[in-house]
Image (cartoon, rainbow, N blue to C red):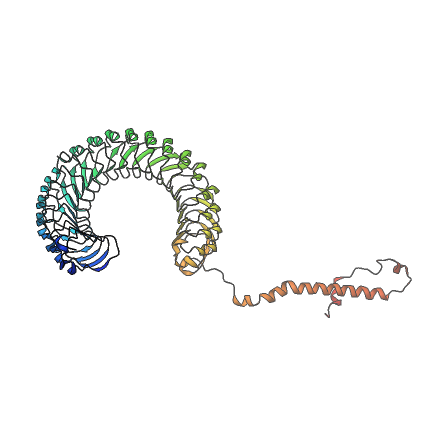
Length: 607
C-alpha cells in the first residue's frame, strides 16, 4: 500500500490505544497525506512517531480520549495544513516548536486541559486562517506576534484565563470574520480605531471580561457585523449613535455594563434584521424611544434592571415577531397599552418591579402563545375574566400588587400551569376547588390576602405540588388529612389563619416545623408544633363502648317491650274478673281503664 494517501476512519466506535507501529514500519508513511481518526473512542497518548508521515497534510484526532501532552515531534510535519486535536483530555503546554508548522492553516486545540501561555512563536505560522483554543486553562497574555497572522479569519480563545489587553495590532486583520474572547480576564480599553480595518468582521464576542472605557464609535465601521456582544464588562459612557449604522446586525448585547446614557433615538435605525437586543443592567435612563418599533424582526428585547421611566410606547405593538420581552426592574409607569396584545408570538413577558397600574388588558387573552407572565411588584388592581382563557400558561406571577375580588372557578382552565403566585394582594372569597385539577402545579402561593373558608380537601389531588403557601389569610376549618398524600411537598405554610383541629402528621408533614402552623385559632398536635395536644380518646373508655351502646339503646328498648307486655296482662286479668252479662260487658271498651303510675310500678316490681 505504498501509494495509500488517505485513511479515513472518522466517526466509528474504534477504541483502545492508537497503534501506529505497524503503519510506521511499512511503506504507508511515504505517501500518506490524510489521517482522520476523529470522533472515536481512542485513548492513551498520541504517538510521537507520527512524524514519520512526512507528507501528511491533515491530521485529525479530535473527539477522542487522548491524554498526556502534545508530542513536539508532530511539529516536524512541515507540510501539515490542518491539525485537529480538540475535544480530548490533553494536558501540558502548547509546544513552542509549533513555529515549525509553517504551512499550517487550521489549528484545533479546543476543549482540552492545556495550560500555560499562547506561544509567541505562533506568529511564524503566517498561513493560519483558523485558531481554536477555547475551553482550556490557558493563562498569560495574547502575544503581540499574533498581529502577524494577516490571513486569520477565525480566532476563538473563549473560556480560558487569559489576562492583559487586546493587542492593538489585532484590529488590522482585514480578513477576520469571527472573534471570540469571551469568559477571560481581559482588561483595558478597546482601541479608538476598532472597526476601521475589520471590513469583514461578522461576529465579535467579548462578554465576561474586565474591559472598560467607552464603546468606540468606530466599531460601526465593521459594517458586516451580525453579532456584537460586549456584555458583562465595565464599559462606560454613552451608547454610540453610530451603532444605528450596523444594518446587518442581528444580535446586540450591551448588558451588565455601567453605561449611564439614554437609549439613542438612532437605535430605531438598526437593521430590520436585528433579532436580539439585550441591554439589561446598564443604568440606562430616560424613556423607551418610539423608534424601537422599527425593529420589526426583533425576537428578544431585554431592557430589565435599568432606570427607564415613562410608559411603554404604543409602537411596541409593531414588533410582530417578538417572543421574549422584559422591562423588569425599571421605573416605568401607567397602564399596559392594548397594543401589547398585537404581539401574537410573545411567549415570555416580564414587567415586574415597576409602577404599572390599573387592570390587566382584557385583550391579553389574544396572546395564546404566552407561556410565562411575570407582573409582580406593581399596582395592578384587577384581572379581567378573559384572562383565564390563556390555557397554555406555564408560569404566572402577580404577587405584590393591589388585586381585589375573588378567584373564579375558571382558574381551573390553566391545565398546564406549574407556577401560580398571587401573594400579597387583597383577594378575598373561598379558594376555588377547581385548582385541585391542576395536575402540573408545583408552586402555589396565596399568602397575605383575605381569602376565607376552608382549605379544599381536594387539594390532596395536587400530585405535583412542591410549594404551597396559604399563610396570612382568614382561612378556617381543619387542615385536610388528604394533604398527607402530597409526596413531593417540600414547603407548606398555613400560619396566621383561623384554622382548627389536628395537624396532619404523616407523609411530608412529618418534616414541617411549627412555623408552618403558628398563629391559628385552635390547631392541636404534637409538642414540636408548639400547639396544645389534641384530646385523645381514653383506651379504658374505648373498651366500654359496647356496654355504653347497650345501656343507651338496647336496655330501654327491652324495658319498653316488657312494659307493654305487663300492661296487656293486667288488662287481660281484670277483664276476666267481671261478671258476664252486665251492661259493662257489652261495651267494646268496657275492659279498659286508666292505670296509675303507682299501679304500674307495683306490677313491674318483680321483673
